[in-house]
Image (tube, rainbow, N blue to C red; front, side, top):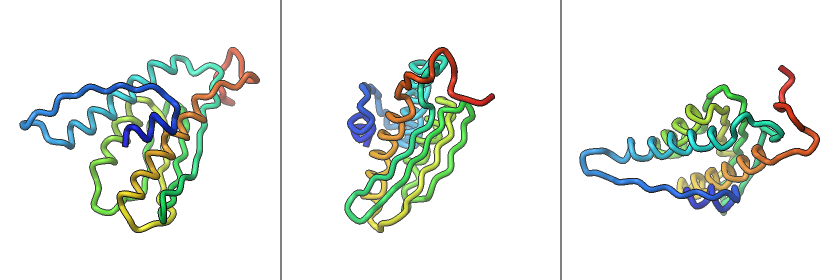
Length: 146
């Protein structure tokens, strides 16, 4: 699923992890989200000139998801539960809390949990790409009214 973020977000990403039998998958997935969130926050720096907001709808067969992001500096996660899969929420929670962003993830249609999750990760990548895109009209400032 991380490939879906990089391919659809058009970003470079290399993750190296060691999975130890005494550490469960929950913590590994959460740690990847934390590491990615920290890396994005560092890469964005002061966020001067970026659009800040990103939104996308992505279908995957019968499923349709919407992901909306605001690189606001205020961590907040709102997402629809997908089947019995709780682990991928931990990834996004780690990302949001460490990137300091607001993220809304909604499943609008579908019944196949794998398709729903894949459409979420694709949509997340596209939303990130839109949010980090530079806007030549926003120079030397943060895109904010505050």
